[in-house]
Image 1 (cartoon, rainbow, N blue to C red):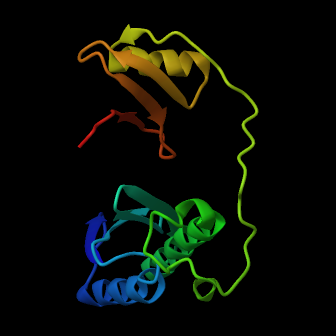
Image 2: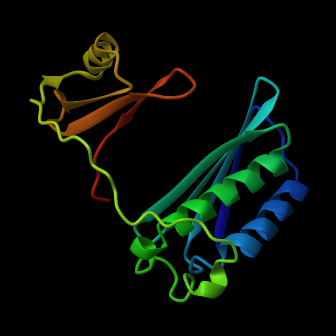
Length: 176
């Protein structure tokens, strides 16, 4: 597994890089092929360390974010969160991740597998062409945490959403 570590407002040494490589190999190599790429982003906020772990394997993306006082603890919790997500969806993911990774030997503890999704509502709405700033304003006016709109600049369907840190983000479709 290829590993990329980024740090924002925090210093990391070679000891953390070695720790991260060892932990990822120990816990996640049984699930992913060698071509998988892992990205760890560490940032410090309010005396806590936020660890965001993103694993790209094939056309699937697995992501977990955890906060702890220590960067090693935050990374361990993020790895455990990804493993729980994989185990919860093992039947659906069986064809997409490493062959044999989802054998009974890969699962030592039992977690109830989510086999059905309870879709309780379907909503149709008209998508309006507008700019990004206008979409954010509309989202805030509606009191929603996300908003779907047609980008007036390029005509694509986009989504703006409010992040946990209070900032905003834009999702744009891509076929790359």
